[in-house]
Image (cartoon, rainbow, N blue to C red):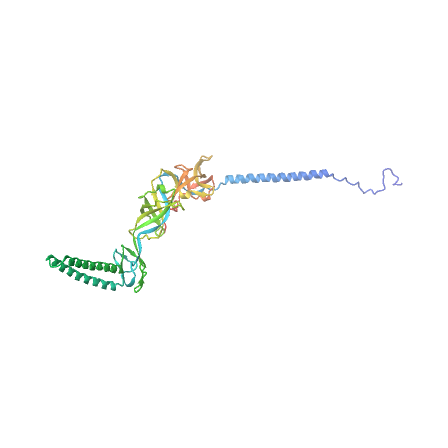
Length: 397
């Protein structure tokens, strides 16, 4: 039997199968697109689920309230004060000097001691003047005798009146010479012009002094002047007799008081300031001329204003603000406190408190200490710790 001749039988081996048809590209696109959609959907769902879980975590885990110190805004009369800076000047102060030339023969004082008015300080060489004084006194004695004799003769009509006049002139001339010489001698003895404290000695025995050479400084510390300046705007509120309080760096924490005694009638054209002088009693003699002082003039009181501690005000370029503590009820009925930033308009600062012109009312509670850790609306709790001392009132050492 001829196999090749059979119908529908080819010459290929029986084990060879027919080749499969290739998968169409569209199916691959569908499969890949489905996988990508599932992947993107899973990522979106994961991000949404993570966001919800984070939101739920923070909603159920609120941070504890920040502990702060609170203060109450008060309505009070703030002292109306005008502050300026100046310096102290002695009412009586001079460099003692000689009126005439001469050589120092004796120094009669000790530097740094207190002397009374008229106390001898330095003796200059005056031997020639002492000799002239003795000569004039002798001449005065002879002239006195001649005058008495001439008067007796004239009274008895034994001598002319002209002789009496000549004797009187000679006597007067001798007395004038005595007075002049005594004045010269007094100039050679330098005395303290007023009571006060002496400074350092500036001369030595044997030194030749010319008129006007400084010998020693003399200062009366019982009373001082405080000279300071204020602006033209503030000059209208000043009057003679107003109280002035002074503070010096040498004695921190102490305040000295005086009275305005002089107000310069002219305002400086270059600075538009006016000079003011106050007289300060210095019984302890602890204030010294030349000291730098901070002066505060006490002016008439103004109406009551709202004030808060100086530490409660936050000063920034955007404006002054405070954190006002407010109360609100939660859904569970509990009361919570929060601090809300409130912008205010400030005025003067006096003794550690700030005048609030606008933005607060009396009775408002503000954060006095701890506002640096806060944001507006943050929950707070009032600390029971004592409030730190206000910087303006803190003790200084």
